[in-house]
Image (cartoon, rainbow, N blue to C red; front, side, top):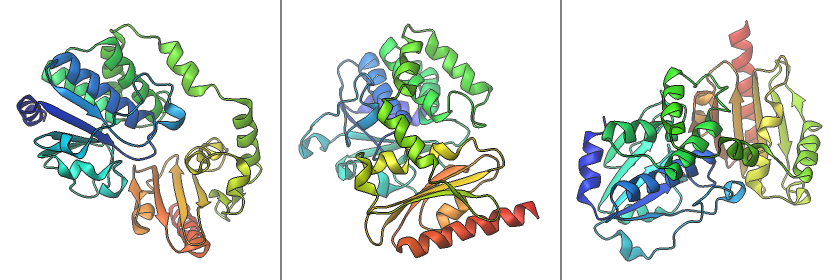
Length: 316
């Protein structure tokens, strides 16, 4: 699976690594981890990471992006990590590269790169990259292992999600042979400022339910600035407040950004809800996916009704 990637990497002196916008721990972990793997194993190569700011994951070592000119892409190899749709890739200049490679664990939606390894069996893109490192015989360092382990932890929900397999623990074990502070990772990932704890409490009070117990939160564009945080924190960050409600198997967070645009994050405990996201132009994992709606609140409520009917049919 990785032989073509290995031979391609060895041909290029410049490698530029991309991932999806608004990065989570897996996107950054895979990006930072791959950079360390390449610089540790090919010290003569120039390796860069590019994209938008790390935001809440800026605590990760090496999360500051490189600033490079367009000319850096001439004759270069570009990696695209943890991204299932071309429209979500941070920094479109990957198109300027001579060769492109995608590594991803989302459900396949479209061909993006010249060489593609897309495998949903992995709980994270970091897990996939760890497998590649072992298969290619690349040495791990504490820096690469720490970044990759962080991504595995975040995308597996601390090894709780059903995407976690025996292979997840095998790969995590390989990473933990290198020395890094595991407790320090958890402390940074799951400690919060008191204002964010209060924010989650506010959103907990906003939860509503459909007749078939699909939980949802709807935030209007007028409400958005009153919370004092960025849109990503509201959209992606607050969907989890509905995750552990007994009797709720599907939940969705709607966030208006303007009169017509609504960001949607859909989650499920048991059933695959990704087809609903795809119907509305989105995608992602089977049980964790999203979409960007351009039809305003009316379209958002139609998506919600689709989820309600979908779950009603499953339960009937």
